[in-house]
Structure formats: C-alpha cells, structure tokens
Image (cartoon, rainbow, N blue to C red; front, side, top):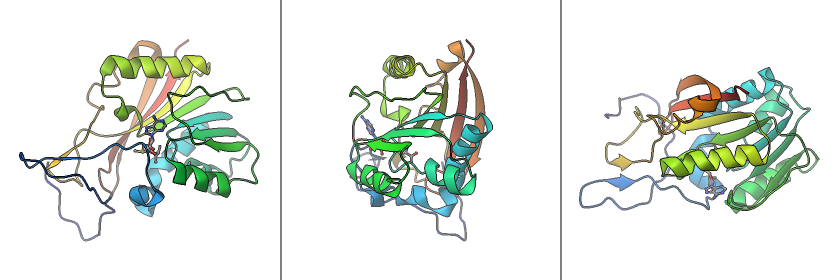
Length: 222
Ligand SMILES: C[S@@+](CC[C@H](N)C(=O)[O-])C[C@H]1O[C@@H](n2cnc3c(N)ncnc32)[C@H](O)[C@@H]1O
C-alpha cells in the first residue's frame, strides 16, 4: 500500500508506538483517548464519515440511539445543527473520559442527549426504545471473530435493537504508511451480519489518515 502524493496536508494522528525489528508499527487501539489524540476525526475532511451516519438516522427516522464508544458524539452536532433533526433520544458512552466530559458539557441543555464514562463490558440501561446502535470504529477492537459476533448479538438483543450503523477502516488504504499495522475487519470480519440482517454498504474515501472507510447500514430481517 503506497501513499499517493497530494497537495493537501492529510490530517494525521500522532502515532507514538515503536517501530519494531521488522519495521512494523502497530496503530494502537486505546481505551482512554484525550480529545487531541483523535483530532483528525474532527476535521472538515472527516466530516462525511459522521454526516453519512446522521443521514441514515434522519432518513430512517430513528428516534432512539445508543452510540457505543462514542467519543464526544460528533453525530449530534450534525443532526441538530446541519440536518435540523432534533427529536430523538441519544445515549453515548465511552471509556475515554475527556471526550465524554466535552460531550456532556456541550449538550447539557438537551435533556434527551446523555453521555456516560463506562465500558461496553459494564451494565447499562436506557429509558427509551432503541432504534439503532452506532458502532463507529469500535468493532475492530474485538479481535476474535466469534467474540465479535457474540458481542454484537448480545448488546443488540439486550437493548432489543433491530438496526445498527457500523463504520470501520477499509482493509486497503491510500493515506497510509506501509509500516503500519492496524486491526481491520472489513475483509470478512463482519460477514456474520448477513445471517440475520440486510446490510447496505457505503464506501468513503476521505483525505485523512486511513480515510477509506466502510459504512454498514444494518437492519434486521425479522
Ligand atoms: C477509533 S475510536 C472511535 C470513536 C468514535 N466512535 C468515532 O467514530 O469517532 C474508538 C473509541 O472506542 C472507545 N473504547 C475503547 N474500548 C472501549 C470500551 N471497552 N468501552 C467503551 N468504549 C471503548 C475508545 O475510547 C475510543 O473513543
């Protein structure tokens, strides 16, 4: 995978892991990010990644949203301010405390938008009917295929949720460095979805680090 030349500066995170003896560098998947670590996801260049999620929510008229590993919940600003879609209940959670604090403060006047600094391993409940769960850049954290399928099944069932929006980095990248190693699940790591769900795929090619992304618009067939 070679990075093509471009006139623009590509928003790129500071990856601090060591280059190993084989000249490989792991792209880390942390549980506690500061806002600044993920700054490239909050650029104009990255906007379509979250806009597409917001458009699916608006088009399908989803009213109850759980956002798993949400950071500061960028989808809320797009729904509220750019798409004028305001009548929904949102619960976002993440183990990263700073983005959760920022989301909480930003939306403190909206009683239907709530955040919590917890893990997906913790028990949590919401007081609304859940129409959709967002998994944006989070399912790749679960390396084992069977475990990933089980995690998805359990969390969807627990909240009686029939729809999901999944976003993942594609297994081939343009804005990349050949030394990087990133856990990718777009080749076949989400094939289990086809058993029970209709899956519409949307491919994005954004001028950011690892900007080729796949969005899975997932709806239960039952
Ligand atoms: C790649 S980021 C994606 C963030 C956000 N969904 C987005 O699309 O911008 C992954 C997020 O998952 C969070 N995370 C990692 N492990 C978690 C866990 N066990 N429970 C909840 N969130 C977790 C990280 O803190 C991080 O914010």
